Length: 487
Image (cartoon, rainbow, N blue to C red; front, side, top):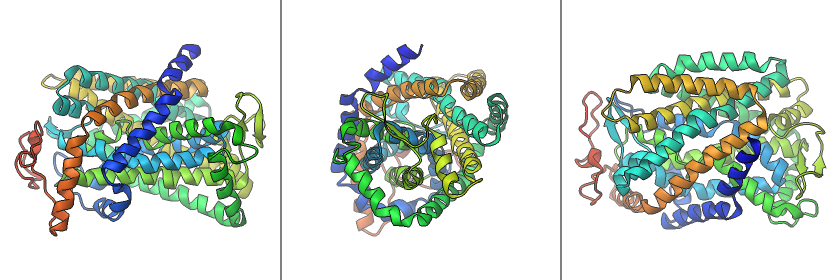
């Protein structure tokens, strides 16, 4: 089983694929004239401007749902794994893919808004919807929906629950089976309440957990502030093969930095658009900009917090090019993952590190599984349009809960390998789609910028702009919280 999974990952995540992902992100950054820099103020302001309705959620709630998917195990275990396999230089490439990936995140999330529909009384959208409506290729859309279901419901929840279980076992000695059972019960209470309950939990939990985690990182940095120049120098030297110790694993630094960066920030992966489509906004570009900023929050803030805690304290191992011998081995016998961060915090604040990271992991990973359910539900809704979906939705909940429990008790390395397969399938399909369908998103950005120059609060009219099959936007947007808008 593990040999097959690793072989599949070798194809999905081969070196050419890594560079293709970087290239596509760079292309979108150029085509949008680096909106991730030009519109940074708008990104922040727009987070708090969208309003919820009976059919949709506010911009901040949509951001929180997508962040609950982005900010997860990848921020703690994934960052540690990148350092273990690629050295400190992998952190630079995680930053790079986040900066470049903001362009991809804007395009995919704007497309989700443009081609969203009102289905069963709520807004639905995402890659399957914009592939069918924008490209007119139904089989392609179905392929993405099935891949997303496979990844979100079967393959990826196990990574999150596995990390929760490992963290609590290391910190408090709680058995994995007990942890898995608790997670499943709490998750069931939320996902059986629908998207509104998911949005409510996310909007309060996500900011709390992210801010608390970053504050602890700042304390550790402050207590080791004299190491700041050395740590940054190490990251940059290692990123370009200039460090004597890590120079021989430059390829690994790039590959693992990009792979774990994408896993963490999800730019171009096709997950963020599901939540973006649910937002009640007057112009698709508004939520596109908000979602682009979520990539910064995830990687530049939360992943960096993990990396700095590990590197400032020196609590990590890094393997050489052969994958067997260690270039650095400060934590003998400790598997790459939460244990690095726990050791880092523990070395500065004895008696606090293991418990703190375990609790942080619980919140990070739990909210991510919650977001996975929402994405899986959206793709079920796409596949079942016009048909009764009560039974399939119930089955989806049971399957996801089962996968979550199974992931909590199985081997960590297999959990990550399966997750990489799920991620790889989605990335491949979504990147092809947004490459073919970038034009409407670029038209929307230009329209947004022109209205802003005129001092207007931008509103969108797809018919006026010549964008077909965007029925929701054919008449100029009007906020109607108590009325169903025809789609």
